[in-house]
Amino acid sequence: MNLLEVKDLAQHFGGLKAIDQIDLSISEGEIISVIGPNGAGKTTLFNVMTGVYSGTRGSISFQGRPIRGLPSYKITALGIARTFQNIRLFSNMTALENVMVARHCRSSSRLIGPLLRLPAYKAEESAIEAAAKEVMSFTGILSCGNDIARNLSYGNQRRLEIARALATEPKLLILDEPTAGMNPTESQELVELVRRIKKRGITVLLIEHQMRVVMDISERVVVLDYGVKIAEGTPQEVVRDARVIEAYLGKGG
Amino acid sequence: MKRALPLILIAAAAALPWAVQGTGAAHLVRAGGIIGLYMILGLGLNFTLGYVGLFDLGFIAFYGIGAYTAAILAGLGFAPPLTIALAVLSAVLVRFLLGLTILRLRGDYLAVVTMGFGEISRLIINNLDAVTNGPKGLQVPPLRFFGISLSENIYYYYLIMAVVLLSIAASRRLENSRIGRAWVAIREDEIAAGLSGIAVGRLKLLAFCLSAAFAGLGGAIFAYWEQFVTPESFVFWESILVVSIVVLGGMGSVSGVLLGALILSGCPVIMQAVLSPEWINYRYLFFGFILLLVILFRPQGILPSRRREAELLNESS
Image 1 (cartoon, rainbow over the protein chains, first blue to last red):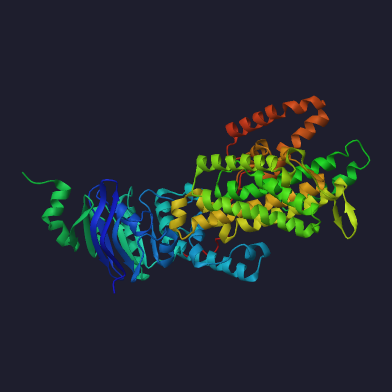
Image 2 (spheres, each protein chain N blue to C red):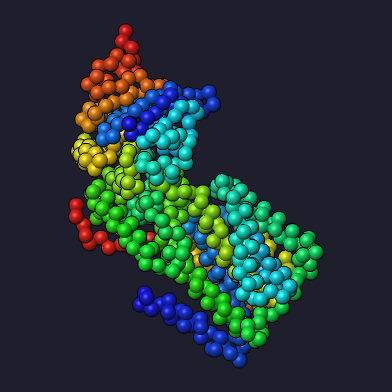
């Protein structure tokens, strides 16, 4: 069984077909890239998959369970986490707190525990903190733990977002343009991080614009244009595909 | 020193009634109790406005619901503990039903609807003569515990102080808990919070209901203390005052809210005592001036909230 199965998925905004007739299957342990020109519908696809939009038609099943139209928090609890194209951190919280927040769906204390400082609550709080520190150490930002998130460097903000997503214990991690605005060295470091994430047993789906990164880490590439899938295959196959070349460069005279 | 300051302040507040006993400043005990009630209201509103960032301009309605429930039940002969518990419960219940319907709204829209609710509540209290006795108000029998009638200001001063201390403890314990972090995350970025696994709607409703519990409790104490409730105590201006307390002190900051309550609800008393009594008429001007200064020079509030710092000694990468 595939980890994620998308069938005939569509998201329309009035007359605009942001995505249409999307089929996609992802098996466990893969690194898959979605590429396409600006406005091709890549982020919309991710938004429907994570419950930000509910989709107009079609189905998404994750580990055999239908998830289209579920609220975001339920999808996260099932095991899909994501980052954002334009970083969305909890800016006025510390870096560590940002990650601790993401342990919400893996913990359970409510009002009585903290109000009475029950032992079970204290134990859970230390477990939350330990788990948060582990993923921060994994992404290499543990030393910034007490810094307010908005004061972090750009590269560390990206890493913090990834740490926050990892803290939800996802089976599928969706990264929306993780190398945007990074120089080649930083991009290379990020590629290494994605490889290490895969080694943790997490499947990675990413939107990426830097072709060097795409060619380097993707095992499979999906190409979108005007909301529909125009090609799919290994990186080498895709860059030779006539329709892909046309979408990016236009038709030759 | 940092740990000693709260203890010194608590000791000073506890000693105040003894220090002023028999002097011309004895009215400060009553003023202290009123400031304490605003502290309870401010700490309550801090759950929604401070932590979750929901603008609420009708908060005083729940103070009114608590006060009127207490007044009506006490009039029917209910025992004080039960009366107070039911007053809190009724405020929470109304808040829950309201929250179910209006929490989809955000920002200004939510502010306008809560303001409308506050006004509607006051008009209902004002016109439902059969239950509330309308603008003439309701008498409340004095609070009795074990046959002793508590009507002196000093009893209420200490009762309110105890409730303030409990409210502070509750706020502090919750703000750094799983639920408190989730609230602040919602304030910071609702979409990212949802995608981090937080059930945004449910947690907003929880904060919304919890804040009403504080308002209901404050209202019940107020009703017993005054032994009289009228719709005049729950006007729109009071809601604005509580919002101002939270904004002036620092949204989401417990010490900020306490200071805000001390300044905004304490200043009329000080102005009356230090200057001449007619200065009370200029208090709105004074509030406006203070708020303007804060917005211009310290928009985060006088004592903005600080995030908790954690030990990071076991660095391994």
